[in-house]
Image (cartoon, rainbow, N blue to C red):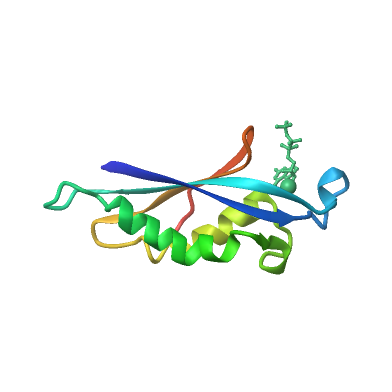
Amino acid sequence: MIFVTKEFTFDAAHNLIKYHGKCEKLHGHTYKLLVTVAGKKDEEGMVIDFLELKKIVKENVLNILDHSYINEIIEQPSAENIAEWIWERLKEKLNTERYFLYEIKLYETPTSYVTLRGSY
Ligand SMILES: Nc1nc2c(c(=O)[nH]1)N=C([C@H](O)[C@H](O)COP(=O)(O)OP(=O)(O)OP(=O)(O)O)CN2
Ligand SMILES: [Zn+2]
């Protein structure tokens, strides 16, 4: 099994509605997203072409979340909930006979992140 990871960033605003503290106020983050696919190599020696992985993540996640107000998309946009939303949007697109979506890491700040290894 080989793990292939690509890193992305997107900028977005949010506020945590069921929360008492500074994060209930409107604020923004430059989120860092790491998407990891696991599988076996094809005849070109690749699990998944980085270009293909980028296209899938761009079309299904970044085009929606980048420069958005995330509360309009996810009711309570904690890093945990955003990561689950991303997982749901990518799991079928990154699931073939040879490879599957293995892990998502979502950094809300350089020092705060969540890791999701979901189930199918
Ligand atoms: N488990 C979670 N805790 C918090 C979340 C979250 O999504 N999941 N979100 C927030 C805030 O939205 C915001 O991200 C604050 O994060 P924090 O790490 O405190 O940001 P700072 O810039 O203050 O962090 P530094 O320690 O200065 O790097 C709060 N909690
Ligand atoms: Zn925040």
